[in-house]
Length: 477
Image 1 (tube, rainbow, N blue to C red):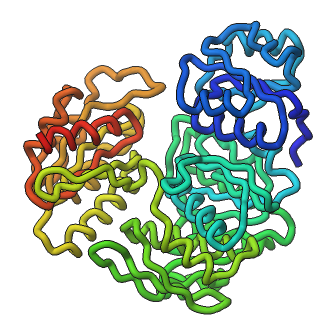
Image 2: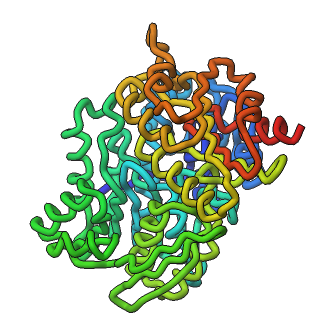
Image 3: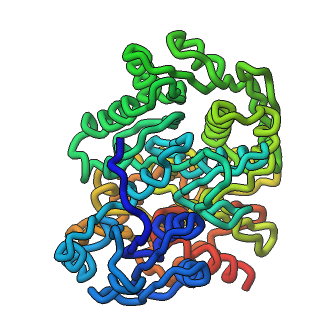
């Protein structure tokens, strides 16, 4: 169990960040006093100020007095905030507890039914589906999501019901801070090896997470994913209640895992994907607005989690039909020219890239207008690009045309001699590929490659999202 943390006065370093600002809103909604700091003003900061937070747009030791007295706890991101930050230094000197965002989230979830979504890919989308489905079913859960719900326009909320839905991030093992009642594992594939050091260590963190499920809790695993299914089998052997979701064939291959959601039909149409799923309570049908088999799988997981949290299956299914997605997850950004549609997606791992491009291919095929799939991709991190260059090239070969930007280094320093060419040189010969190292020229490069009825994707975890609006403008011009 988590040691109780005094939350009457909370100071948050980097309070304007997506994750931090969301938890700050929950704290304020619960009546706690909140102060914080960031390097610049932003919309999230202004929203927090209107709710009563005291926020300084600079980092300095005096910020610990913004509430008129010292905070009872200081929250920081160990990855983003340097240890010599003056507020961190002042907090240690004053013996004020310093915790991570995951510690704060764990505390906020205490005494609530914890629905936690974990996995290498699909956490944000699946968490968002659970929230949207529960809300449609008349529930008002608290939630903390890694992206903004398109319809709600927010990523966090303090709800009236005793349900708390959140992502469980494995990238720094912070998911081990939580004690879930209901845990979903979407898939497991080696990632974040710069932190874990080996695939074995990465796999182990999910086993450790499963061990934290409360007595009488449930582990939900995707049986179409080899490693998630293996985790499910190990959890069954250790006495955890496990249910699976996936196709009829995949469930039949794992008889030791109790079927939770069996995908009976999946029909891709021009606008939606019609899905029928068999649950223990009966069959439900719904139309997903977001394309791709991976999204069908995510919706099946959301149905199980929602039912276990106390909602009715049919109402959950209706909520899934109304689900319009999450920012930067196959997010529609506009149409220009002769029916050239532009979407934006956060995919930055080869498996994610392949899933999104596969979904885009299904969509243009179902439309029957002869459109192509054009992607503007920006690799994220030098280490990931080097590790998965071959896999990225194979995934990007699912597109008809590729514009490859240079690597977005984020927290990493450039590696001499390494550029996106290590991917572009390996993409299939029948794909129209352009390596574009000039970020400002990308809009024109992409626009010149598009034809009528094409579907364009800006893709990656970095600044490539800024290109979506630029490309639309260039095409229209």
